[in-house]
Image (cartoon, rainbow, N blue to C red; front, top):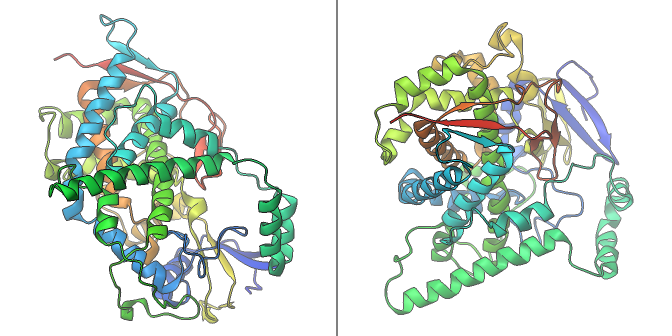
Length: 472
């Protein structure tokens, strides 16, 4: 365990387990990229299913060669070729979302549409995109979004840093955690909201399977278009594999079979159903708050990249919107809201930059510090300045890590950016954006940002928007 306490790296005990917390950019890259063979796994939840023995494990929780297989398959399912297949679905979802936004106008003669809770609005939208792209679900549901209703009952609570008694005991005596889990299950008298959410996802999967079976029977398997579930079932295989999970594993030499079991498909859908829309809704909330408070930047963005383009822009045009992408990146630099999810666990002893890491030592990455380091970004570090991304220095490039670093970087990054850019582009085509809500600041003086049980950071306050219809 690291014995030296410094400004950027220190260690603590979580129960009986040593945890290293670091914001040292060089150390982060060494752990997440250069020495990835010894840090290929994330910190598991203390009472979660065993990532080695359980059949029901998703990519985020998987370890070693199993992670490599699930990651490779999912990366292929979200490749540029596949994103082009998903783009028409995303575009349709955005069009339907804008119809919903327009319906919120109380007076058609009034050019202003007042949004009282932008985060909730964007959650409504991004959850709809998720159900369409992942499950092939085609029912319009902005006015009665059952997926979001079930999700909101299961997740979104403030993260409890003061652990329950069972969790505390499991951290202090990890050898008895399985017994604690068993006792908890037999004492449970009703379904938890999280379990109800999982049953709803299972319902979506079973309905998809029934539809897929019908289309295969009539020899029209592609009638419903591309979806992630279709892709996963194309590679469905129940063959048991022997996969290494512990120790040093040279991932570059691991041979991957593109296959996934039924239980893994269910687990992947659970993971994607949370990560696939929660983070995107957070980013849209941040982006539009910053644009509303920076009208000059909003004007330049509209004049240079949005004005004059048709509504039905193609995939390549969306990909080429550099200023819009820089606005998104700057929002994520100021608020890397998925940072609590950036963790690693050491699987083989080694020394890095003078620090000795022993097996099972846990690592928590803190990107907030390098994202707000004046020595890296300059004196305007707390300002919304998208132009800084036009030409990053090497230090800035390495310090920017909202999607993580290395082979376990967010697998849905390109999908998220495509959805973010398409949504923002189409919204700014139709509306200019203003607000009566305060500007989000990282010190929490005006808007509180809190860690939720999704592992992400949400605004506590309701952030409003005023959308003004542009004159045609």
